[in-house]
Length: 382
Length: 121
Image (cartoon, rainbow over all chains, first blue to last red; front, top):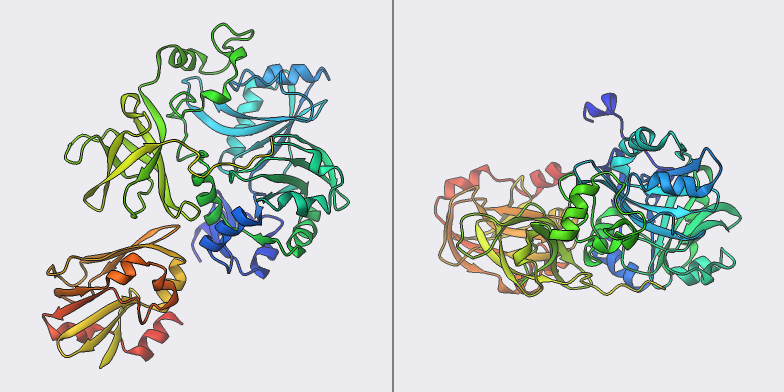
């Protein structure tokens, strides 16, 4: 194949052989060989996840434990608060929270999940950022915390309305979990970390399992007639319909949490007037944007026609204006919407729902309407 | 009636000086579920290798190039209205457009079915 095989070989997850057995089409993604789709194809995989249950291999993502050297769990929470604008101290044991690592300039280095496991924190970060995240944490908080990456754990996501009934057969007590509950649990006899969360807008679970048991667990889940394996293609269309950001596309070091419309994820305790205001990287810029607004904003966009408007398309205020006002950062076709959907950045003055903007696609200006997200209502069990 | 193929996975059915053009079954299987098709305007004059139509799956957009030069005589509105036809009947009902062939010598560079099968093997 290509020279990169020698220089920078693609990594494989513990489910690689199973993917091939299941007829996956494998593609390079974030340094891994990952299944983009299986025999059913993206459209059917997407719809199956919304109707029954889909199993995703997300073992490429980074899993880390943070432990305070003092053994006082609140010290780990307070240390992590230097790197994220979220309130980590207030996350109760057995719960998790969505967070972002921010840069000194207020941009987003990565987005992540943080769970309180009692005497330590469990973090799940993006595959493409995991090495940088680990180095960043060592730089910022290793005075207080031990940072332990967990490369020997796989991560499976079971998503969709039947996820609960499927997993209940393998995990006693699981149905009592609610959205964003997270903690160690035995699944099919394996020592797992289970959270009720995901990246599809559906109810569902993410299951961290020791690598050597991942294939057996995946096979047990796939034995259930309600479960199909789902590739990265449908994972992307599902998260787009759910209005969820993809790191490196909708958010990156040039976008702040305020510009990215993620204010909801920054608790009041870290904002002006809060008990622990600021004290995180980029606080000056981010708190200033909370007070005075940001110049641009991430919005949902619904193309008025049938043509998908994809990442990179320039946005314009008018059908004939010359200067672009922003860019589409994610876009495609939503199988459940049965229509195209997109998101992107526009000036805050044009960010109100119902505002009409135009995207340039193959030399034509196509009209889109700023629209609320999620595009497809989520079904979380709160 | 002759059917010819391009290395870009289009088929051409030649009847007199008219070519009916679509994408091959191999192409649709590689694209996956087709969700959008954009066709050229009737009357447009296409040059060989010019982007003539667009076919989009959930994942990506692909151009369909004019395999030969000619004027667009007719387009298949049924495939624009129901893009999934491309997946179910790429070589039949899902034709894209008909061209009035302007230079028959351009057909010489195209493949017959046996050569196309070898190309995709």
